[in-house]
Length: 335
Image (cartoon, rainbow, N blue to C red; front, side):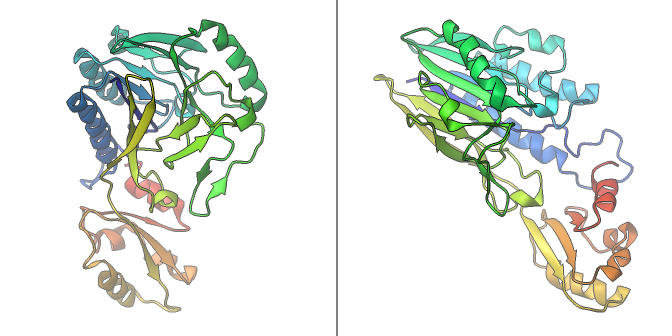
């Protein structure tokens, strides 16, 4: 029975400064750890194929050291004998950085709309895909699907992997739903001849269905990238194909650090009363918490400066301040 692991939106390199000015806990290692855990799971499962749905990296221009850290992991994984297929996402500007590590014969990635063919446990698989279309995928997708169609084998199991927003996908604390628009693929435009659609880009794990009830799997991101995702469970999917070619799938959760809002709701604060309020709220929290401070009266936001907070918050925690993004980025991401 062929087994496939599908993960996406790993955002490797996020909050991973190579020469930090302060010895503080960073979130970057969390992303690498969960990426490693997903690959380890695939090896322990003896998976037949791993698929990455895009946004392997956290941005387009990635330091060479980060590129090597990521690609060396992928290369070593491929050395175990399991092929891995990668769809470039929007964070890679639809193409992966060049590296000798990526020349391994079991590392495949889409540089154009194409089909990679596999025979897994006696079953033929056509792994179709294309790099992220960053503008006007609504009008471009039908032509992409037509370009791919002649390359599909008649008797194969057909998978289409992409990194796009699809009609009906939801995200965010308000459950925003993609209904349409020039950057959204419509359900009615998904071809009928596929057995499974796989997509990255949306960070919430969810299952949608095409017009002919073909499952559309979003594994979501492997880590919480923002407080908008603070209540979401993160992980990846294990996909199994039976001897009768029936497809089943299971979400495999990954451990993530808690994200907690700290509400500072008094109308008046001094430095002393602000410190007391914060300490009362964080004393019994998990030591690895990621905190977001919210002030009722933003007139006192200047009290929440880096020196003040670093003197209160444990270095095992991360923090940010609602309404003061520049301070947050300087203190915890760009150092």
